[in-house]
Image (cartoon, rainbow over all chains, first blue to last red; front, side, top):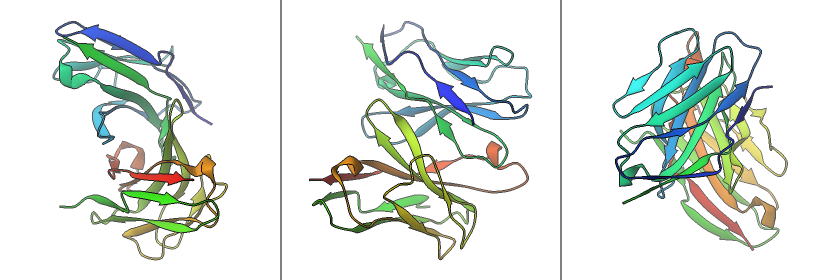
Length: 113
Length: 116
């Protein structure tokens, strides 16, 4: 069974600064996908970024980028130029083949002025 | 385009009562899921379905039943609600295909259930 671990329950950052959220996972699969989801206070689940394991290049979406280290089974999310609207719970998630989506326990990010 | 719709959005139940949460998707997706979210626990899979007429247990299935009689609907039932089932419930769906793991998963807006 796959597991996803987020070791930082809470993090804080000041507006305009950069913050990195950590995620590690465990799997025996070779081909899989990793995701970061954002959940603001509205509880809506918003896909932030997606990484395919067989792609060497780290995924980037505007101010969001990942550091994907396949051998270390690490998938961290970097948020640059943090904004107040980035305040949310962030979930790391994993899926492969026909399996379901497995989530980490989440990291609550607070962006302060 | 409605996407994934959950009803009801909010419900308060008394211990022992029964209820059904309805998830409807209009994207013709094969796969549908029910998750529950509790503080500090992330989202945990209750049951899922890979097609009409099929269901399977997830990580935390006890106390719940599901049905997928129509492709667009996935029902989650609580036969005898318990306070431990107080949670936020999310439905999700995605396409199948040869590698479904790469397909985007669409979530509903959540259903808040309180059992007193």
